[in-house]
Length: 279
Image 1 (cartoon, rainbow, N blue to C red):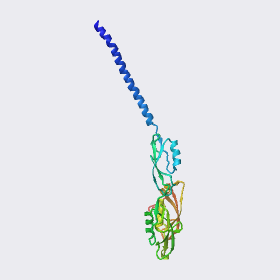
Image 2 (image 1 turned 45 degrees about the horizontal axis):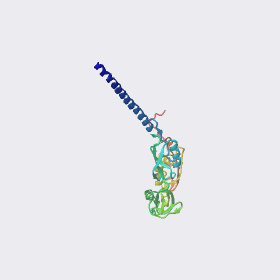
Image 3 (image 1 turned 180 degrees about the horizontal axis):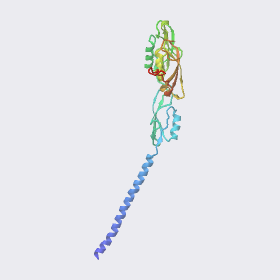
C-alpha cells in the first residue's frame, strides 16, 4: 500500500520534468529559427547586387545610378588626369561588375576640379630631344615643331604657349602643350617617316617627334570614346606612309588613324617562298 502511494507521488514529478524538458527544447528550436532568419535578413543571404560602372560620370550622375542600385557612394580621393572631364569619376572600388550586398559603400576617386600646376622651364639652346625630356619631367607636353633657318638643326630658338612666347618660371596647367621654334640648317633639312603602325598613340607620337615630324591630326574610330581609350589605341594607318629614305622636310605633319581593334592593324606581306615549285 505504501509502495503504491509513493509511486503515485512520483508521477506528477515525472510529468512535470518531461514537460519542462520539452518546453526548453521548443524554446531552443524557436530561438534558433528566429536567429537564423534574422541573420539572413541582415546579411541578405543570396541577395547580391552587381556594381554598375560609374567611371567617367559626374557625381550627380553616379548618385542617381547608385540610388537605383541601392548602393552608397563615398569620395575618398582626387587625382588630375589630363583629358578627363573635371570632377568626373576616374576609379571606383569595388570595381564594376563586382557582386556586393545592398547598401554597400562604393569608394570613388574623382578627377580634380583644379588641375595641377607645372612650371615652364628654360629650353632655349637645348636640342629637340633634351627639350622634350625637360618638358615631360615638368609635367608638360611637346606641341608643334616650328622650323626656322639656322646653322644648327633642332636647336631650340624659342618656346611658345598658345602662339605667344612664354617666359621660364611661368605657371601652367599640367599637361599644357608647348610649341618649340627650332633651327633648320638647309644642308640637314630632310628626314624620313618611320612606320608607326601597330604602336600605341603615345609611342607613335614619340617616334614621329624623334624624326622631327609634327602630328597633324589623330583620327580615332568608334572603338575609342574616352581619353583612356585613346591611350590604349593602336595606329592602323598613317599619312604620309612610312619611308626608308630621307623623303620629307623636317616639320612635315603626319596624320594618324587609331583603333582599339587590333584586327585593323595591317599584317606585313610575307615574302614569297623561294622554294615554291614553278609550273
